[in-house]
Length: 462
Image (cartoon, one colour):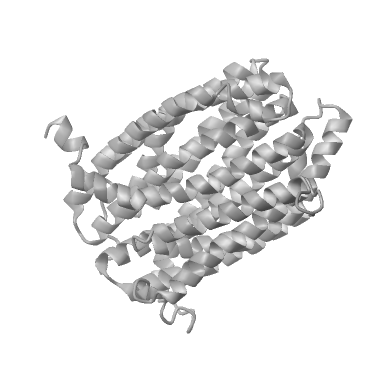
């Protein structure tokens, strides 16, 4: 088989992929666009406000990723049940997701509510001025207090959105996000700056806007799922009881716990790396916040392509089309990397432009521009490892994905960032580049894992 046959599909192949992935990308683009608008509007107020919101969003990020991990284990079975045409099996996976998300929400509210001060303090360097430290802590706690409410609609919304996507209905979550975006932007404007007769609430206004938009986004998906029984056959009798066959429950727990722990520990690891950078001062926190906002927006493309790989390849594995699953995965891996290169080239011209939207010091803007450039060059690497992760996960090899994602982050990246940050005087520019491009090692590991075909596995044959 030559290169073209192995890695490049025909028009029908890309048409089917794009029909599924474009709504997923658009949904997350608009969601991240809201974060970008939030960020810019808060950044127009001042640097302490931006830093406070940025620090809290590190914790919200860990929660969000943990929710994704919470639905992922059941999602593997859900995709394969859908490929098999087993709607009763899907129903069991939805119940499992709802229970899991509820437990995660309760635990997160308890931890963030009780330990907000010590958690926020981790990201504030003692080298900064007492006034900067006090202001950052104050704004962070104001923002955190309100944002805790948003955890409920986000968690329940993801439990529903994940199964709706498995059924190929990717447009509905996209529409929900677009509606939420409009509401969020409007409320951001009137509540942060006190327009149209509303009080000027600043960071608290940004939090209120986010909470309202999360409830609307979740509400649209939940209502649609319950009013379209023909497209969501699993929804009929969903709440009649919460019975899940014990054998399936145990299988979902076995597959799900490694994914849940992996997502949580990976997200916590990314926050740990951010904490290592933060000891170099609040200027670094501000610069990372600015650069992360724009790269997260564009990174949606490769992230959702990875999720698409999990759904498409998982359905083929569930239908017992094992050879077709391998061939499809090759083409999707290549497609993901090519698109990420194009996206990276689109980011580069924005590196010097985007930081100027923020009302902050020029030194922070310059550092943010540099970080954007570094992250753009790293994007094809992230794209490939993300695609490898979802490939391995589609066949239920969650123990391996745990080692691949969590193991690499905690055993290599965090020690690297910690040693360079705490025990060397390395310039933040070089430090950031070294840690970012350490992803190359993960690329090599991912390549051999996918090539081994250990992930080709039908979980729902019986």
